[in-house]
Length: 327
Length: 263
Image (tube, rainbow over the protein chains, first blue to last red):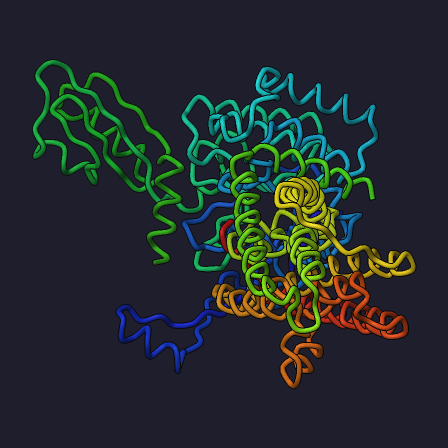
């Protein structure tokens, strides 16, 4: 049975039109035009226990709005959702004790105090027994390697250290469902990898169901077997990441290297669309069905071929193309 | 209940982190207190009284108001508006925690700290200035304590209600300004309201603010007949109940409007 079920979930925001300029601002005092923005439009999906699903989409696609509805912050304009059997926006304590939302762009720790104070507060809020709190805290602190910063005020921590502490604060009550909204945003590559490794391990060991949104394709590639692509408030794709390439990448990529003599652009243009060109290395895009024939033709030609590789198009490129085609 | 006690403790710690802010806030209070003291001193210099108040009663009122301001007028309920606008409010919605209760715990932490400083300020200034205070009738002590506790709750609830306008508008500062202005004037924070007399006094007595500062100090000074004390406390309780009901209604509607901006 799915742990998260979403049926025809929609959210429309209301706002007022604001024309630029002083005169328009004055006019706005007397008459304002109400506008509506469809943030999420009748989306459907379900997620099984223990899955780690990536939510992909450009800014404003509706990813965060969906997470806000699933965590009970927002009331939807229409549709239904159940997480662990609960309607999220009823905000029952029994549900709140079983999930956590981590926002990369929003600090949930007490800014002026050491992170340890926020952990102790969360212990009381989630009514975690003393022994369980001690055990969970030790485990998480060791896993993330933050023991020495627990008594440093949060405002003095680096972004990476803060995110580790955010993770601890959110996981102390052992949530069964975890919503991660851009957890690696703004982090350097090393910190990004640390957080990614932790999420991967935590999901594997604890069987926690995770929905992850990220702008970094590395996060998605590394962590998510399944992705849900959302754009313009609608779901464009829901399935395995690997199958996304087969479905949306109509082309394959041939990378050909040449020996010392090199080649000219005119000599190689006939084999396919040139994505990269230098006299010693080219990347050409060819239709999937014609990839083998094109490779054979290049090898059979008079060109001084040193090596040839047939690759799938990078997943980043596929996603970029999907978003581009929907604009 | 333990979770709110934990919030109380952590709020105390945070208040003490910003010692300079705390000291500056107290300095402002001392300046206002000195100002009011010298105004009333000059007004009562020749006759020893003003309106129906003797000099001792007026000084008791001014110093008493300083104490009550510190206990009653909090800032945490005020912050709710910015919390709604900047998304911090969402953090409370995610947890098994009542936002109203959490902010009240923060408010109590702040008020208890401010009361501590206000008592010291009042005693030191009274000693330095040689001010003598009127003593209350022993029978009025319990109604005074009850009234102060009700005033603390009533101010918090009214202020929280005003902050909840932020669910509908990002411009909650305008109504807040009006609220603060009305509050300062009509609660009797600067002078005993019955000095005004006539229609203005009657109008002010119809507002909930009337019960915040003026009413408990009038009980203390014996200006209110015993029977009317309990009637006043009943009216104050009714204002509190009405405001709490309004919060319940506004909260339910507001949450449906809440867009979780800032996250």
